[in-house]
Length: 472
Image (cartoon, rainbow, N blue to C red; front, side):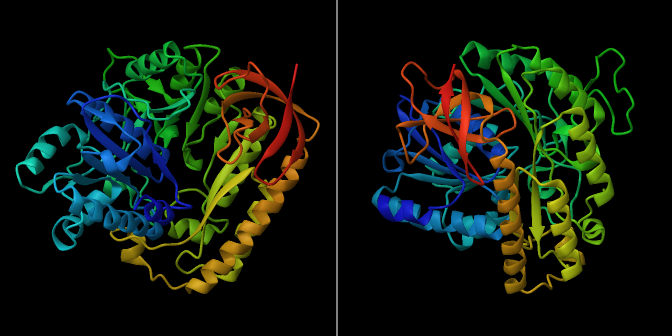
């Protein structure tokens, strides 16, 4: 069974937790964005207090949870296939509890619980505190569900169980939910309204990570730039007795935790990317020179229908300002091809933006209509699938060429790399990333281990990887 399950998830963005000692066994799989993986660490922390420890072997698990993504239809189909395979395991072990967490929970709770009977438990992103009670209900013979959304930060004081094996990098959630209402996106309906976390709890978590030997943190949110503490959406102070904190100020506070702690963040929205944030990045050497700034389309017409609340011109101005304030900053983006009513001219405009900006990295997809979104209600999904795929292929080809050219420019240069581990395909190599988020591989050197900073001279490059050697 393990072979067929592994084949079923080949090529998916799946993260499985490390193994720890304990009495009852919890097996977690996380799909989709980094926020889901961070949430899985919160789940592991909540259940650790109930006597559960994580395992990497699903066949020995007492509870199997899949933390799911609803952004694209393919992700949902992958999770469904996985659940059918886990259902076979349940026939051998009737006491096994199978649950779906995250973004698929609210949308598909009836189908998963009642119609297809694939799971025992369905829990939304804001309801993980109720997991012990819901597991107890399942053990009592009932199916359990909690998909209620909160208007408050839900897990601020919980210290996550870190599931990444390297012990070098970690996530810190700083906001939850989203208010942007992009017409293609289901996140506001699955994760609720936007709310920010108390900055003091964020700094405390960062300090704890440093004390435990972590060398890098990534501040997470659906839109980190809209982080605000004690500040209303109109920019007004809510409570005059409490200090206000913007995202730029929070970024500075985290950078000051330790000069040895690398700081990253994701994801940004072009309409909220302020000069203050850029100047803060430039001021602190330990804030990585890398920004993920999704544009989605190079057509103003499509951006308007996507409800992105910015224009191509505004986006390009932000790119220009980034490169002025932070020279050599690594920039990545998201692109959706084949959105409703997209013409060949719209597609050409997206290609023009790719060639103007020359992104270091891009996450590229063709449009997949999601239920309950504004686009589903307002527009017809009228671009044929073969056209979507052809346009995506053209975008991918151009992006790879641009990334290859950019990486070739790194040959001969020396970069400081934070060693994260070894590539999956070659344990005789080590790997890590530059401040600009370039992925680098190099031969192992005696005495160098994950968590170390090393200088690597780049000798070769592909469109995705820099290849080098350690130098003194």
